[in-house]
Image 1 (tube, rainbow over the protein chains, first blue to last red):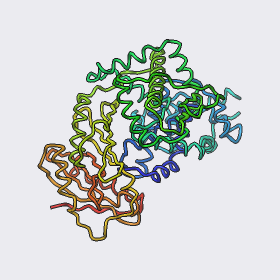
Image 2: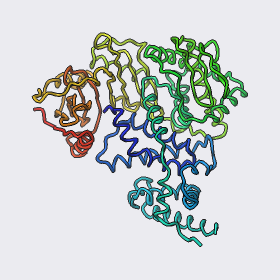
Image 3: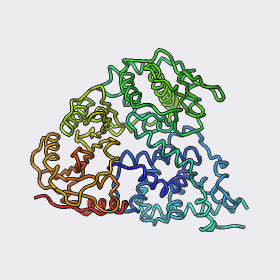
Image 4: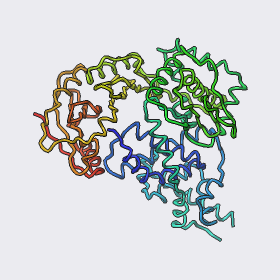
Amino acid sequence: MHTSKKDLENLMEEYGNMLFRLNMILLKNKQDAEDAVQETFFRYLKKKPCFHDNEHEKAWFLKVATNICRDMRRFQLRHPTCDIDDYKEYLGTEDQKDSLEELIELPVKYKIPIYFHYIEGYSVKDIAEFTHCSESAVKKQLQRGREALKLKYEEMD
Amino acid sequence: MKKWIDKDDFKNSVESLQLSDEAKNRILKACYERNRPRYFVTRRYQVAFTVLLLSIGVFCSPVAANVRSSLKAWLDQMTQEKVQSIYNSVQKQTVGAASTSRDFSDEELLRKGQLEELYKNGELFPEKEVLVLDKGQGFKSDQVCYQSTNSFWFLPESRLTDEDLLEIIDYEYKMNYCLASVNEEKGLVETNAVVNPSLSEEQALQTAQELITAAYHVQINRDRIFIEPYSNGNYEIKYLGLELSEGSKAGCSILISGEDGKVQNLHYNDKKHTAVSNTIPDSIDQNVWYEKGKKILSDMTGQDRIKSSWCLIYTGQGRTEEITKRIYYLYELEKGDTYTLGFLYSDGILQTLTLGDSYLENQEEYQTAWKFKADRIDATYEIKKIE
């Protein structure tokens, strides 16, 4: 059905920041992250999906954004490497910057489950459904992601 | 020595990434622009997964291969230096979506759509190339100019000529072509994502025209119908020529599956109707547009047999919302396909048509979706079987 401007503005308020965070982590670049948010909302407008509930809606946005980021990364049109300066305007302390820097430098297959689990609070089972992986694979990815983050901190010190 | 990231600190760090209000507004505006008929927004990354595939689709479509080969020839004649130059300029863009110094008028948008069809078919090209400005260069008040760094189109206040519009179209295609061309060389493009539909463009157009005629009883003006093949094999057809009442500027978009030729959905677009404050009265006639919907469906599918049907209305506090002005009918066909048709209650103009799975077999799913939709606008829904 038709999506009114009000609907879309409400959705932007609800999910805009969440999608931007995810996109920033996956794409490592503010411009690209904003582009991916735009593409996600545009797909919503085009597809006009129906949802069972708020969780279903949230999951749809996250899943579509993840796919869009994957496509964008695949092509690597610009900014193939992370420019941490893009994050500085958002960060309050050096510790925050370090945490974020560690996360964005993780391989994608680790940072997606880390993000969904620790930031968005999804269970291993939910992430397995998102990523079309087995639960045991997701557990392994989370474990390795955690270890990688820890190891990097040790190296820094 | 810090051995572990504190979970809360970690979450706080990530949550410090916030989209600015300015960016939110810009994104919303770009979405509305892109969603308009024959939208005019160039996005660099669209190339990665849509525009670029579309351009491949344009050149590869078997139906259109002959006529469109001349567009390919037109773009192919650019020198390597030119291609690289346009590619580099796109890479330097600092904003995500193109903007314009003023909105296109309805007439210009319509003409742009028509000219783009001719351009895509290789029948008409601009005589000159649009003026591309470097950063800091001033605009010329009487000429279309493009500032690449900001993805900004300067449009003169006067009515755009066909040549102006063609130059804009041409440069948009050239940007996409150059990105595709250079990235293909770099192995960045995966062309195997394109699905070749079994339905031809002509067949899709035919289906759309039959539906438009059945739903709105208008004579189709071929100049006002536009087709866009999607990389997933489906077709979107937009018709900008619905004049159901004097002076009304209505249109509709129809999505058709390239796989089985079925109409997936239709959306009617007319601000005049959606903005009015009429609502469904307290005492409704649930059969008011039922036969009309049945006839549209029969004309569209060629099937007269309807297994079951229902009437759906939304009522409640959110009565200013569009869905509360409509009456919906669900028609389940013999083979289980269920079409939902929404009519403006006051005058019976078809607003939406959607193909879904069997309602009889998926009642719970349908009802949770309706409830969710109703809850969002503080309304309730009511579904009644039509005997």
